[in-house]
Length: 159
Image (cartoon, rainbow, N blue to C red; front, side, top):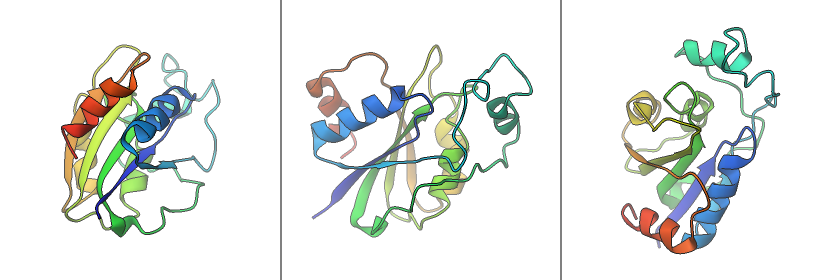
């Protein structure tokens, strides 16, 4: 039986709330992408060109290290909902780090995000090279409090 995974990176907890609620709504497993070095408020200051997140996002080859153990039995998942906050109009490079750990050939990867002001932009285009053989799709920005029904409706388009 095909299984679904909701994997997410949440620097401040906002994306994590939505991701766990989505997983609960559709009966999916969850995996939190935890950075090896946690992000501080100073690291996340997008107005500071020298902040950690600004530096990482300027460098398309940046691959922040992940501190959480890898997903066990990734082969069992057909669909992966992958989430993070939108940084500089795309999802953060730690999601590239995550994708590059696995052979995701034949899997569907649906991106979703939380964002203060922008959409997913070129996230699928930026992440696809990190998951060769997978279908990477821009899903939606899921801001605010979404009901279980709204989250199910979003997910059922892709499962």
